[in-house]
Image (cartoon, rainbow, N blue to C red; front, side, top):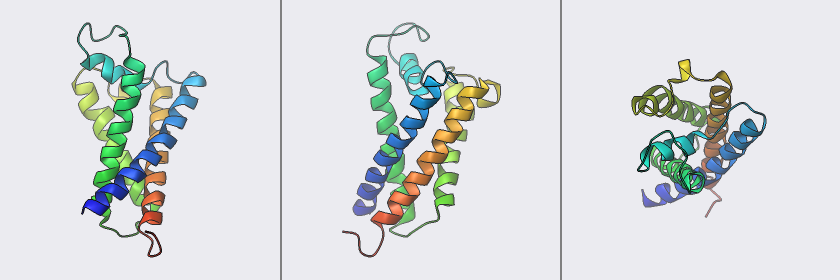
Amino acid sequence: MIRDLIKGAAGGALATAAMSGVMVAGSRMGLMPDQPPKRIVRALLPGHRHRPKPGEGVAGALAHAGFGITLGSLYGVLARGRRVPAAAGVGYALTIWASSYQGWIPGLGILPRASRDRRGRQAVMVAGHVVYGTVLALAMNRLNAPDSP
């Protein structure tokens, strides 16, 4: 199980980096004014929940990496050393997206539900989660291949 956690963490780190690239590209294209992880950190830090705070960008990036690595670790445990279709990783990532952007994030008043949010932000976030799930599954399949260390 520890080995699966570690492999999942490695896959989660790689997948989060790929997803972050999609998010940065979406921001540069003007599809979302700021990054959701930064908004989440802003809301959780002391002070007014909707006003920018010093260091929130770095804290948001670190929180996003930690979240992605943690959920990658969980995926590693669920995969149990088996190779899984990339579609399973995409399904896992879209479940994370739905539970986050239709669930706990609007529940905490950080962003509106995905169904009521900016279309551009949600398009970027769905695409980012598809990339996360694909990269996570492919990384785990490589790490779980018989010839892997």
